[in-house]
Amino acid sequence: MKSNNTIQAAIDLTAGAAGGTACVLTGQPFDTAKVKMQTFPNLYRGLTDCAVKTYKQVGLKGFYKGTSPALLANISENSVLFMSYGFCQRVVRRIIGLDKKASLSDVQNAAAGSFAAAFASLALCPTELVKCRLQAMHEMKLSGQVTEGQNTVWSVVKNILRTDGPLGFYHGLSSTMLREVPGYFFFFGGYELSRSFFTRGGKSKDELGIVHLMVSGGFGGICLWLVVFPVDCVKSRIQVLSMTGKQAGFIGTFVTILRKEGVLALYSGLKPTLIRAFPANGALFVAYEYSRKMMMNHFDV
Image 1: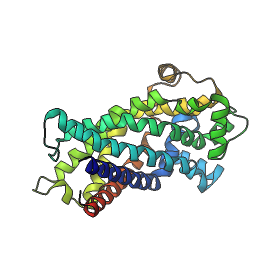
Image 2: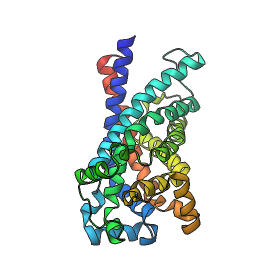
Image 3: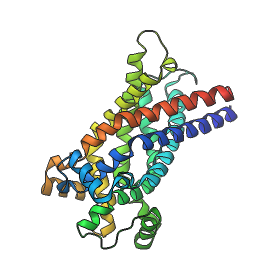
């Protein structure tokens, strides 16, 4: 039994890594626009303006700033997330007295995903901090908030270690967890609800094809971002502006945004996020489900 659980955990971890890679490669330019618009909403009138200015000022490579840490962030987050998701599903079955192979309801799967997100936050926060700072470095220099740009992953890492020490990588951890835990309830809930919709004709969820998985994954991603986007906006501000040494905590940052910029500032960057959510999360779940199914069949689990 322990051997089977270990194999399942390894399969979930590997399939999660495959999903995270697919997610980044599909959606990175939109994620870059989101971070820029969240952190400096006064510089951009919208997604098109942000895209045009980024291309003129930095070129095509500007859309892929932070891709390396984004890959690391998503691979580490989704590896831990889906490994923990499988573990939390087993815990939920045990708590409610179901057989170990029994199917969970959509709400029960959503709860398992929410619990799993707490573990994933610990893996995600350091790498997402580096990613967000790289993505917004050009605007930090333009606004005079930093005098010397840190244009590589290593330069950002060195700066964090020099100014804040190892714990500096966890700037924004509380807001990351505040985003992830409720967000992934709606993420997995939306995904499973959509899959249930497509199986009303008598199919099982395991029989769904690529198109249905893409749509279900995209729907789950949109559910997540519509619920947690203001929290994500505060998190991005904390992680980017903390390099100036003056950034407040979650409540302080939230109140400052509301008082100085209004409630709409909390939704800066929502459009590219929703555009990105569909293909990126669709690709995530297609890669996860197909790689997981292939490995489960190979190991006969």
